[in-house]
Image 1 (cartoon, rainbow, N blue to C red):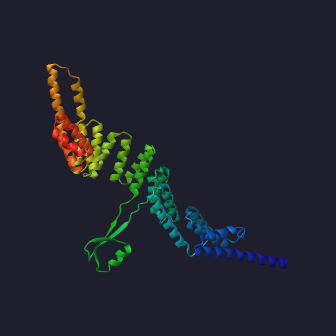
Image 2: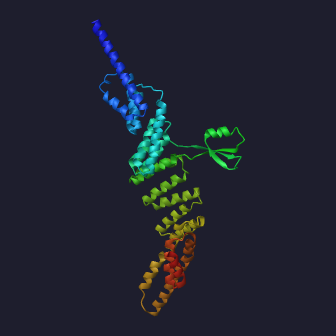
Image 3: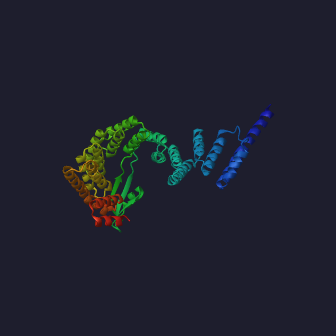
Length: 406
């Protein structure tokens, strides 16, 4: 019996030695760059590893994870690395391997984004996040952005909700100093910043923190809900966000945009006025108020808002065009009345009055359109001026616009 036990012990020991030997051989092949050879060796010895002890199995599992990583089978690699640590596996290269894996995932995602493979990019960035959820939160944020770019709204919503739950802000600090040699301010890394503080090569050191990304995340959650047609959830998300930061301009505008979608113009107008109080020199806010006022038939208000738009931003082309369009709205009523007149003396007199009113509208529009042409050579403005000059019989100006258009 003792002899049988001794023989069995020797066989087990021999098997264990063989298992370790084959794993080492596969590792050597891998380290030498023969990834396929290492993979083939593990596959060929699959039966040998059945029943192997945990240490050998962990070594094999770690190598398989590295092989998957080398072959860019990133999801499989991550699963195996996680299984390795869950089984108590320890390897001195593990942390370096994880850092390399994260870098590979992010670089590959950047390439995917550049090629508009947004779904693949989002998946890789999310995988990079899961490797270290504490240190890699930024990658979850970028994964959500990629998903939005690819219109994978369900996925983007899940990612943004996760960011919201962790109250992710993504605030970064940039470091600046003025070079003594050039006299110009330059940006530098934190380590350089601390180092140069001890020298005379730089002066006027300053730090600059980025804005929190949290309001943007809440805004995007709301916009995704709105795009998916769930306006109730969208409104709930925005109102929740505004409770935390009631003066945030982006959140005010997001809520205003939702009211536009819901056709609640009164609420939209109130919020736009609130936004203007926050940012009184924002031409777009006045333009949007002009659009809503025009839709509601408040012509004088709309005209005032459009004029304020181009006063703040003289290059705001849509402000000029909408102002002209608003002025010319009366033209259709004038033409309709002119067409309905008879041939009596009274009708002829009224016709002449309406014709003058129509020409006055045209002349009111001419300086507005000419200013836009001077600023931007706007094609729509040129065409409108051609029509106006043609109607007024100003042949020379008509030809001038025609030449400009051509």
